[in-house]
Structure formats: structure tokens, C-alpha cells
Length: 519
Image 1 (cartoon, helix red, strand yellow):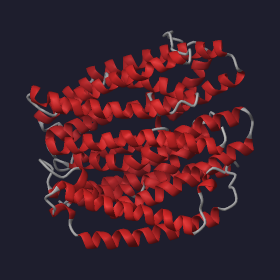
Image 2 (spheres, one colour; image 1 turned 180 degrees about the vertical axis):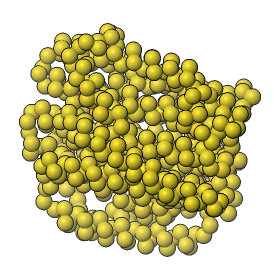
Image 3 (tube, helix red, strand yellow; image 1 turned 90 degrees about the horizontal axis):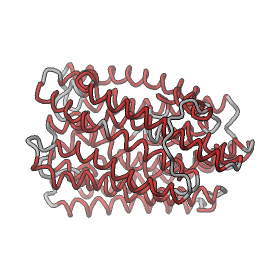
């Protein structure tokens, strides 16, 4: 696949992801207005994040990073029978493991709740709610892991659209649960947990038949002894940390947030959801598209193509990530007010969520770069180097979280959760820097001409964009006091559009053209 083909595939993935993010915004907006910031909502955030972290390991994270390079290596040999046999055994092994993990997680839910939410142990009602929700959300891991296996196979065959659009179903399932099941339960927020489980089932049902059209629908054979499955398992072990370092850092934040005031979990969760918008739209899209390409270039011993594709991914990540971070930083409060404020989510909640969003947004360019840098190692079946970076990053995150949050907590400063978000952002920057440094040492970075010019174009475009956004925000005033949602949304869209048009116009005026992103 040429870099022009990579750009087209990334555009398809991003377009489909955009639909998912729009549905996600609708889900979050409804969720915040119905449940606000409460002990029940905090309980759901905890019960959702723990299986979600495991999803990053067994689904689109660790498993995918280890599975895709070997899948493409077998494809390169042209032996379809061997490929089908590998997928059969891999599916059987993965299903066996996630069934055991989900069962253990459900049975050990009280222990897990106490470990990841120590602040809730002294709140019996909240603690019991976390336990009940965990027992509902853990089986979600089984369905989403099998769906991710199917998505990995489809992506490797250049079928990016359907896997990218299936998260829309996740959001729609949760929305349906909120609308139809909220009144069924004594604790209305329990509907969210059941919605997550239904979402996993629905995504698998939609994606699984697509494998049949490729002639690769698995028959489950627990193939732990299969040589290629053993290779996947060997590669997976080091990636348990590295492929999900951002989620692991969020889990660290979850532990500390459980010690803070009620609402801290929810504010952090909603901030992370907004940060995930540009990451999913651009960072994950680039990383998903580039991994099969890099693994094929490595299997074909095409060092020049490998280096050029990596360089392309880094440029695209910066061009998307830097303005996204700047935009979220400057518009944190207006954006939060438009998406979340209303119903039980007050203006005070908006200001608290905006604090953590501003802090976390600093790490967006680094989060995107990591989505490109990590596949550069996984494509070469090197999973140990990213693991070292991930372990160091988690240590840095814990140290920074304590340093930033503890003084705020001890002196009862409002917005102590912002220290957790800031630590997450800085730890992301540290992780990207480590990965870049390791690649440089290994001689895998092959910078193409034009980086100096790109940095200048990026800097000037961002400065001009910032001036326009700040001026318009000052002119519009305080979004939290606007009573009409459509009024708030109109002014936000106007400011975002003005900032986006300014950014693109300056890049074009300084000579950047779409063809430069293809070659």
C-alpha cells in the first residue's frame, strides 16, 4: 500500500470514527444530564474502566499489536490454509482466556472494587454498587475481545470501514439502555452497566459475519500448542503494559480520584471522553492503518518503505494533534458546557470538568505520536522495548499524581482532580519521548526532507489560530451562563469553525498541500 493509499485508508477510518464520536457525544450528553455527578455515576465510571482496561489488553491493544504482525507474516507466504488454521487456533485460545478472566473478575468483584476504589470501602452503598456493576460489565470483555479479533483480521485485509463504524453500535446500545431501562432499576445508573454488556454483544454480531466473506470465519480450536499462537502469546506478555499505558495511567487516576470528593471520578471520565475524540479520529486511525503496513514492510525487508511510512505517520499525528490540544485547552469550558451542561449537570460541574480537560489536553500530541511510535516496534515483533517505556511511564505518572494531587487534597483546594489529569498528560509526553528515543537509538528513524519547514508551518498556523480563538471566546463571553443549549452550541461551532479554517488557511498560505501528506 502506498502512502497515498495509507492516507485514503486513514481518511476512511477517521470518517467512520467520526460517526462513532458523534454518537459518543450524544451518549455522554444524555448521560451527564440524566445522572449528573453522583456516587452512582462515580461507581459506573469505576466499573466501566476496569474491564475497559482489560479490553485494551485482550482486544484492540496488546492482542492486536502481537497478532497483526504474525498474521501479516503468514499472509506474505501466500498459504491461505495455514492462515485459516492460525486464526482458528488463535480464536480458540483467546476465547478460552477471556472466559476465565471474565469469570474470575465477576467472582472477585469485591476484591477488585476495594483495590481500585479504596475510597469507596467506607461508603457501603457505593461499594456494593461498584461490585454489582462489575459483575455485569466483566462479561463484556468476552464479546469485545472476539469482536477485536475479527476487526484485526479485516484491517489486515484493508477492510477498515466496518471495524471503524462498529463503535457507533456501542454508543447506541448505551443510549437505548438509558432511555428504556433507567426506570426499571432502583438505582437508575445500573442501566449503563447493562447497556455496556449489550453493546459488546451487538458489535460482535455485526462484525463476525464479515469474516465469512473472506473465508476466514474461525472454528474455535483452543490452540495453545500451535507454534504461531505461542509466538503471539510470547509477544503479548511485554505488551500488557505498553499497548495500554494511557488506560493504565487512567486506572492509577481512578484509584486516587476515589479518595477525593464525590464527582471527581465523573469529571475525570467526562474530560477523558473529550480527549478521546481527537485521539480516536486521528491518532487511533493512523496507528490502526499504519501497523499492517509497517509489518508488511518489515516482513518484506523494505527498510526504506518502513522508515518513510513511519515518518509520514509522525507528520500526520503532529498536524492533527497540536491544534487539537490547543483547541481543547482554549475551549475546555465552552466545550464542556455545550456537551454536558444541563439537567443534573450544573455550571459548577462544567467548571470542574474543564479543569481536568485543560490539564489532560496537554498530552494529546504525545498520545497521538505514541499511537504511531508503538506500532513501529510491534511491526518488528519487538514488544520488550515499548514495555520498558510503559513501566517507566507508569512510575512517572504515580509520582506526579502524588506530587500534584496530595497538596491540593490536604489543603482542600477545589479541583484537586486536575492534578491527576495533569499527571496523565505529562506522563503521556514522557512515554512518547522515550519511544522516539529508543527508535533513534535503534536507527529506525529515517527522517524525510522538510521537517524544518513543517515545524515552522505548524507553529505559525497554531499561533494565528490561537489568536482567533481567544479573541472570539472573549467576545462571546461565559458559556456556562447561557441558558439555551442551541445558543451555546451555535457560538461554539462558530469559534471552532473559525479556528479550524484559520489553521488550514495558514498552512495552505505557507505552502503545505494535500499531496505533501501522500508522499
